[in-house]
View (cartoon, helix red, strand yellow):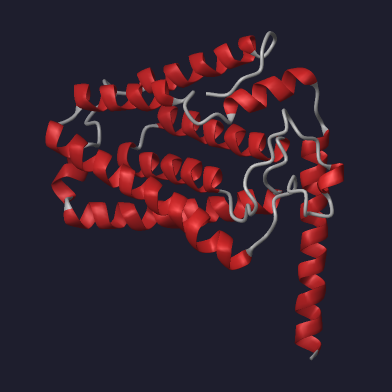
Length: 234
């Protein structure tokens, strides 16, 4: 009985902290940030980043190894997304902050009426973003690309809290899902196709993977500029 009460008290405290952090991030808003976060969180705006990464891979590494890597990347994103949205969300059934059935919804700042789906724990955006970051770090071991993807994933997660569609805890747990899934997928990739994995490691400093990092920076700069004038998501 004592252990049960202790756990209940701990969970209530964590939930209170989670709500406080979420509302603090969501509550720090203005019209410009509304525009920026809505665009940054868009589904299709980052297609140039993905395409640039594929291009630089085919230009610098063996074709067969790149194809295998892309297949495992698709597997990774699929597992992250489906684990978060189709397996864990129905299991936990935690309402999004912005959901009208959530008691705190009246305190949440909403952008353009966007409230997301019903449940949000854990965040699929977080799982996909952090999973991709870690997998690419495992594969390429290049600091420029890793730092860029880490910042990209962080801002993506921040935008989801800002928009009121995820709690801070949704993001943290989504990150854990992404890290675990990326580690498992890379482990399988490495053991099944060790030679291909080895060939994807640059042998010198001639391939720093600056191109996709530069595309990510340019896209972010464009969003920062466009946010002054309009609000739309891709």
